[in-house]
Image (tube, rainbow, N blue to C red; front, side, top):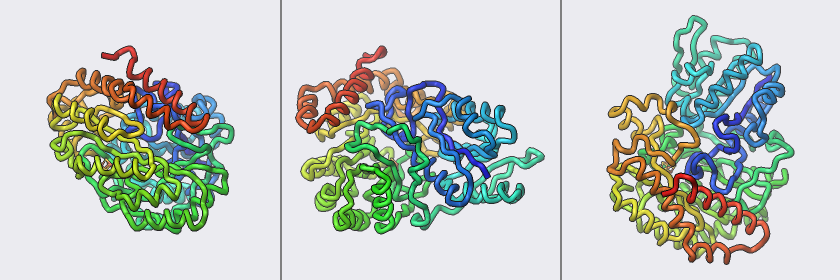
Length: 486
Ligand code: SF4
């Protein structure tokens, strides 16, 4: 069966590169103008290819392919698969509907947060199948049945929401969360567009690949979809499998790996085993990961640095303990201070993500957040407006008070993500306009400090780092001093 797995080109902003929503966007631009290999789509494409299907993987965003060009490439496909979130739903659905008019018999499946939490709305927007929660085995089983001509079986695969031939809604039980992540094959990097190098200013060595070696997060932050998409029981690839995959990627020419796990450091012993294995097997590559501040310690960070980790991204979120507690972040300000100091002592750069407009936020707590950002001195920081995503407790609270939020997608777009505060008035005392101005002011205050500029210049070791600093710096300045600055 011929299947197209596509990262669509967003119509609303041609140069927007999407993939990771968390903490990297500003006004529709990724800070630094980065592009990220879409590992979730690549995982799905790899699994289907392993299962014997003809897979056409297209990153239209990276290649800037028009709808017509994509349609030409995937002619003959029977199923198109996209990942979609609340922010991209409108664009994705338009793209898919247009493809279906150009390719006879094409059906469409969507996975991701929006199909998971709003499956009926996903079908209404033109998809034939909405996949709830983790898509890997659901899509494998769906395609197997479609390939066998078993329409009834396809409609009843667990994890699928679809409509029967008479239009009735078929909502199956959820597929169990994937227990054994070692069954997921390493990403087929040969499927990535050949002539396009993914550039990212936070990456030291190109080419790079993004991967995930665990599913889920032990925390339950009230604004985050991860605990509800993946569950709160974190499941891990074994250290041995991670090491084998790394060896494979290095063989494929990759020089850096970005672990996109929600919390790569959630299992301390596994991190120690991976790092020890990298050193013992002499796997030479640099890497980045996401972590929570309460899951790191000096010994672990020292070993991570020796194993090639050069950057850790943390969600510091707020300088107010009251606000952190209100969103059930489960960390203390002291843990944040410790984690950033330990990283600095270990020689690992840090990225801190902060939000304003969280539940219980006031003008004073926002200033405490800026103070904390300056105090802990991360290498880079992002500031965004807390946004209620469908599927989260925060969204449910807002929906109870304000029906206009609908399924969350009508007013949502990448351009507005984390820079507009449409609904924050329902849970904090700061209005949307003040939040918008605060985000820009925080960027200026954080990045345009002489101490920060001097420190950044001091860290530059080679031409690559200089290029990244210039590109990243210009993007940040452009955003912070942009037309709507206050
Ligand atoms: S720690 Fe991060 S990934 Fe985990 S629930 Fe909180 S925001 Fe989500």
